Length: 270
Ligand SMILES: [Fe+2]
View 1 (cartoon, rainbow, N blue to C red):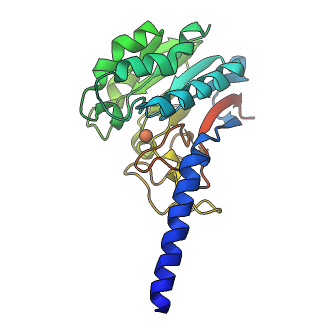
View 2: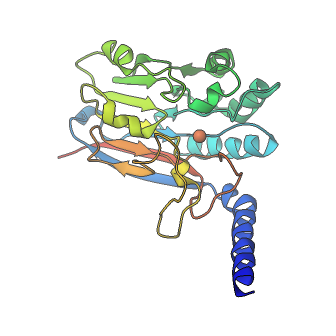
């Protein structure tokens, strides 16, 4: 009898937490302003600001509205560049490209560059290549194992490891050796495999664990989003920033893990 009461108590608590998370926590977008001190970051780029919009998982009206708020929040900060480290959509279905155009539409008016890489969800029931034309319409560069020089920085966009598409070597081989390298790669744990010492890597994928205890322990984590769960890891093989992301994966709820819009200010370490 006592066990039964315990079970129903735990069940009610769990269901209540899920419902609270679904109704409120998923909507509580938090602006994370972080200053990262990076070795070898050039003095002339001291103060360079990067907005990060990770994991919007666009799939329905609610995710579109949240993503639009996230884009507006990022652009209000006046960053130098906007970076989307993957999982733009939750999965492929009819009409999803129009949803992407609606959710990210404001990026087309941004004066600076915008770049994006695929995440594993951008391959769910489809192919990340199909996002290319919609993103081009919004002036978003879709980097899949490619590099591009913007503002005196080599931006290396690596494709998704979980989708078996990643080739960081091909992209890094294209870089200018006199300029710093920032890698954008969806799966954060892949930082342990990065060759040739870039200055920074930016990731998403983990959703910060999505459900955590108040002290940050996450009972369920994603493959390749486990070791580096969220925040800044200055002592990783390459300094790494992992965003908790905007949207949700699995149950559309969060607990003690607010959705995040990030603005990174990059400073030269002294
Ligand atoms: Fe994701």
